[in-house]
Image (cartoon, rainbow, N blue to C red):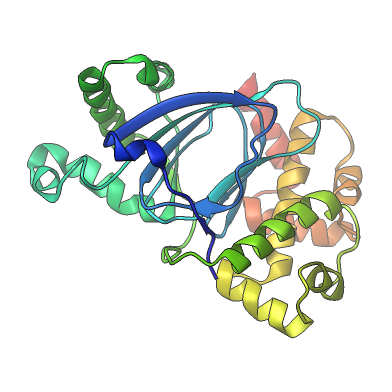
Length: 283
């Protein structure tokens, strides 16, 4: 049960490829590739999927992905800004085993080892400036700056995003099912969603769908759905002053106590604490 394989074409010509892009919204499907990826979100916001992780993203989001780790970024709601990002791809030939055995590369080696689970960073402002400039550099200077970025990130505060073991071989049918499911949840998460309704959407029996989703995402579908709803609720808590109960009902939760339990489960704090914490950070 795997994501779509994506061939990173430019790496046929170079071992390190850094580029920036801008579009109306992030439209890449859930996919994977054998290259490492470092993605810096310049503008836009939404939900980030990495393996079985479902988290909000916004401008400044910086994530390192190991080889064959399925991922995608999807926008949500009305957006004022375009979707823009800087992406760096490189393959295993760039930093060979002999390089990574050297003491100078200890931090980078451990960073790359952890990337199989996806890593999200808190980082110094200088890293954002370096990433924005990286695509404009000549190959040698790009490589030198890239190493400096990795070394800084190896010593920065970070968070692992998902379980390991998401690599695999291409399966186009499963890829299409999961992307259809993402579109369905994005469109209907505020409504009541039954197992029958979602399994019909991807033309499977309820039992087959439950097995399919649990094997693919390492969690039941309704856990995934509640994570998505909590992510949408977090966005609403940050961007508005509406009452917590209205946040819950506006994002598909039919019971306020259940909303509080789910919020505590996924965010380790109450909705009110989350809103207060975010506003203290922003002030």
